[in-house]
Length: 116
Image (tube, rainbow, N blue to C red; front, side, top):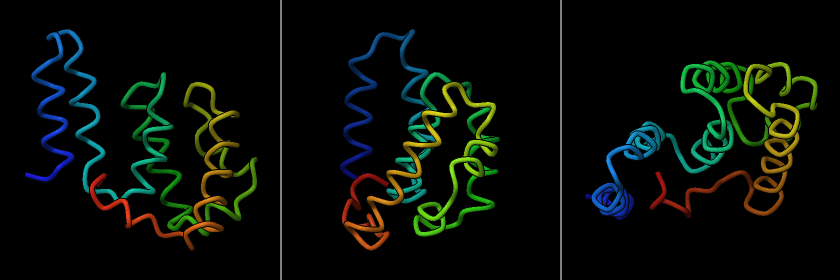
């Protein structure tokens, strides 16, 4: 069991039943890599799973790497995630995060290996 899985399991044990579905949603992110995990968590806030899945699929089909996403225009990203709540803000932040990841870490967040 990874460190992340142990933390998730401990949190799940402590949560009341009505909030456990949030943890199930988090588990869907596992194994996608730290950058994709970060972007998917941003998209998931205040958005249904169905809409989030559609948005993330569209986003990753067009922008396969942090570098590609860092070069994207606001209009491109916003159009792909338009059904997500707060999409203009999220589009701007996703591009800014991609740019920071590319500038600071060369597009590679795998040093955060415990997160995915």
